[in-house]
Length: 518
Image (cartoon, rainbow, N blue to C red; front, side, top):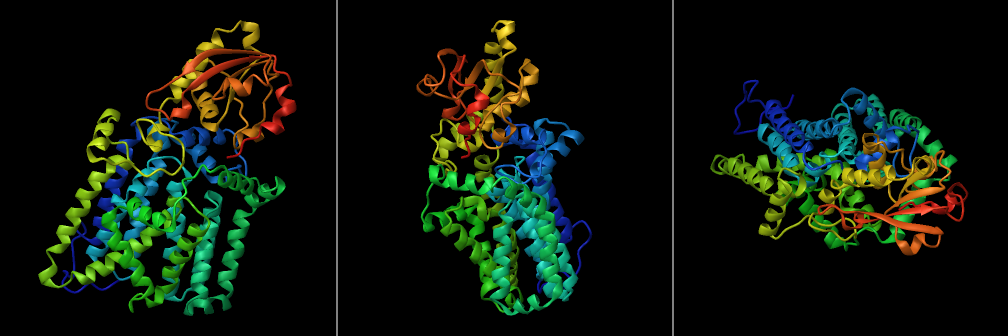
C-alpha cells in the first residue's frame, strides 16, 4: 500500500477514500453512457457486427473474432436493443477509469492523483465516443492498460511469473484488434531501450510471448489460409484515399483535441514523468513505448484515434506530477479549481462526442459554438458529423426496400435478392428485415464477400447504393423503383433503389469480381 502524500490526510473513510472516489467517477461514466445509449439509432458498424455474430468464425476481413463473440453473447444474455448492445462497451469505459486510477495508485499517487486521472479519462471526448458504441475500440484500452498494470507490478515486485498475465492479456487483445501488435512492439522497444532489457534473460517473458501467440494462433491460421485478407484490406483503404491525410503536426494537435485540451497538460506531464523525472526512472520503458507508438502511427499515417488506448497511463502519471506540484498549502486551492475546470470543460465538449442532446438541439449547439468534431474519413457530410450521421436512416431504408419487395409478384419475389453495396446497407436489411418480411441481404463488401450470394439464383435483384450508369452495363432490364432518403444520414446513404431483372451473367459466376474491400 502506498504511503499518503504530504499535505493530505493520512486516512479517509471508506466513502471518501481514493478507491471510492475513482469508483464514483467510473459509475458516472457508466450511467452517462447508458443514458446516451438509447439516443439516435444503431451505428453502421454495430449492424455489421450483428451480422458477424450470425457467422461466428476465427476471423473476418476487417477484424479478429472477439467482437463477434461479444456481440453474440450480448444478444444471448441481454438482447439486441440499443441499450443491451451498448452495455458492455459502457462497462468497459467504467473499467478504463478504474484502471487509470489503479495505475496512478501503483505509481505512488494519492487520493487527488487517482481522482484526477479518473476524471481526465471521463472527460476525454474520444473515450466518450468509443465507449458509446459496440466496437473493438471500446475494449482495446482494457487490454493495453491491463498489460501496463502488469508491467508496473513486475517492476515493483520482481515477480517474473506475472508475465503470464501479460501474455494472456496480449493474446486476448490480439483476438480483439490487431493493433495489439503495435502495442507489443512499443513495449518491446521500451524494454530494449532501458535497464529492463535484462528481463529478456528470464524465461517467463518468453513463455508469455508463446502464450500470446497460442491464443492468437486460430486467427493467424485463418488469415494464412485466406492469404491475409486483412493486409489486403488495409492496403486497399490506404490506396483509396478514404482516410483524411494529416501532417505530423496536425496529427499531434488532434491528439490534444480528442483527449480534450484541458487534459493535455496532464498527459504531457505524464510523458515527462516517464521519460525525464527521477521518480519515473523505473518506468522509463512506458514513456518509450508511447514515443514508439506515436512515431509508428505518424509514419504509417494511422487514424488519429489509434493512439487513444495508451493515454490512461500518461494521465495517471501526469496526475501524480500535478498532485506533487500542488501539495504545498498555498497552492491547495488550485486542486478544486482545476477539477471544476475539467468538469465544466468536459461538459462543453460532451455533446460533440456523445449523443446526449436531441438532434436539432445538437445542430444548434454546434452552430452556436462554431465547432464540429474533426473528420476521420473524406466522405462528404450533411447536417451531422459522420459519427452521428451513421446512426440514422437504416430502418427507414429497410422499410423502403420492403415496400418494393412486397410489391413484386409472388413468383418473382421468391427469386429476388437484395444486394447492398456496403456492409451497413446489408447489415440493416439483415437486422431490420425480419420485421418487414425481408430475406437476408447479399453483399460483396468486407466479410459479406465470404458469405457469398447465399442460395439466390438472382434472376431479379434489388440493388442498394449503386448508380444507373454502372448497373446499365450489367442489367438488360433496369428500373428505378424507389428513393432512399433521410435528412440526418450520410449523403452517400441517400440513393435510388434499382430493380435489375435478368442480369447478363449469373451473380454466382461473377462473384469474385464483385469483391469490395475498402
